[in-house]
Amino acid sequence: MWPGPCYSRRTVRQVEIRLLEGPNVYRLEPVVKVEVAIGRRRTWYGQRAPGRHALVHLGVDVPRRDWPAQIDAVVDWIRRLRVDHDEGRAGVVVHRSSDPGHWIVTFPWVGAERAHTIAEAALALAERDVSAARRARLTGAQERLLQRWTERIDASRTTPPAWVRDADRRLPAVSITGTNGKSTVTRLVTHIFVKAGRRVGTTTSDGILVNERMVDPGDWTGPGGAWQILARSDLDVAVLETARGGLVLRGMGYESNDVGVVTNVSSDHLDLQGIHTLPELAEVKSTVVRVTKPDGWAVLNADDPLVAAMARRVRCRVALFTLGDGDIAEVRRVVGERRGRGGRGGRGGARAGGDGRRRDEANGRGYAVRDGWLVELEGGEAHPIVELGLVPIAIGGLARHNVANALAASAAARGLGATIDEVREGLIDFRPDSERSPGRLNLYRLGPRIVIVDFAHNEAGVAAVLDVAEGIAGGAAGRAAPITAIVGTAGDRPDDTLRGVARIAAERAQRVAIKETQKYLRGRSRQSVVGELLAGVQAAGVSTTDVPIYESETAALRAELADATGKPRVIVLLCHEERDEVFALLKSLGAKPIDVATELTSLIPRLQERPRRG
Image (cartoon, rainbow, N blue to C red):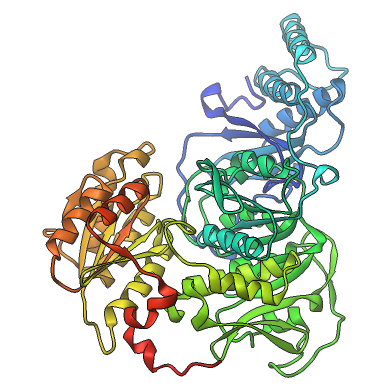
């Protein structure tokens, strides 16, 4: 039995033992994560953006006086076994989880199999009420149990962590994370450096690229992809898309980066691996900038409070980007402006970060939009980068999310040493097409119909792509073409996300269709996913009677194009599992990719009225 007679084995459960091989939300080093659930099984409930009283800080150390007795026993055994088997003495820490009754114990490790076995032994010995005190008198059965575990630990292998230490990393690296936009920023930064003549290795959710050429398809946004790039000797720069899944399941896989980027934090991938709220998700993603070297740059979204707050936890210089003109307190403080745009502040103002380190607040940069230009702010000066209208992915400013992505990419490239001219050339040359940015705002023309293919898979992403669709549909004066939104996403999203995606589409589009994503049901039934999407349509006050349901993305697009033959219409397809097939279908139907850089004013006629600056 566990300590405390009121608990049985049925009410004290091991959830998981996981080895994290690099920086993570708990520590900036490899740790063993031991998760235990105490008490009856309960499901998390609460607000996605809780008040201060309900916040759970995942990485905070919980003092011993606040642990349950069951955790005491586990920790005591971990400490004893680590000392006995050369796994170290210090560093066993307890953390809270927002899952009711769940507790996390973490400790550093040097040998994978040995550390895992130590965690197993600690749980087993605590469960049998074996005292960890060295002078405790044990029964014969307890002595034999301890001996068996001791032998197993002694026999375990000691494979070291696979993370890349700073001493072994030759390439300068930028890590990019966020709920939306990380793939686009990754591709933009890559293109800026390739255009400037650097040799660039890139990891994305589409695959590993070298100089923008695919060398290994697949989702390589975890540590495995980073290891492949950082191990190469034929590259100049590493650009690493870093997803939530890799951070929570394995850690970052390398000790530090030179630039860390967080694009935004919004509802997505919640209720997975014990992450339920937006502040918790932000804390996970902040790992990317917490590991940035002191002489490096943390690139943060000043318009997202959860992201902007990360500036307090970093040990490096800060670059904030904003869709505004930069005349906000956060940006002024970072760039050293005392008041407004014109006042030039001093270089003082050092303060302590959340990790106990000090940094110079006024030694940073800002990236903003002023008078139709992307600009870099430093001190009291604004340096123009490029006219917004010349950046294809911005679509004349309609794609505000891509304006933010361009600003983030500019800051990241500058942090890695690119010149403003190199940034300008890269942004102007990058096209949102199916080759350089597949599934990210790819536009096609088929007669009077415009098709937008986009990977949007959460509320924020759907809202962003519909902003663009409305701008295109509006024509020169008022709405000239109706919008069809074909929606659907993976089954591992919580109910509120599935409903939110469909609700936003139903509120803003004139027609909604549902496409199934059967390869990514991830434990849900088809009926459950479709049911939640239909509930979202109903929540928008739209009847579901005329909402068609298609079994695939290609079937949905083919049918909706046929229904709109000869009619002006903007069709938005949320494309997740049949991207190549969708592109092939459009080609077979005679659809032509739209080159935004050359066809912008024909795509959005009202932009002809805007004065150009040259």
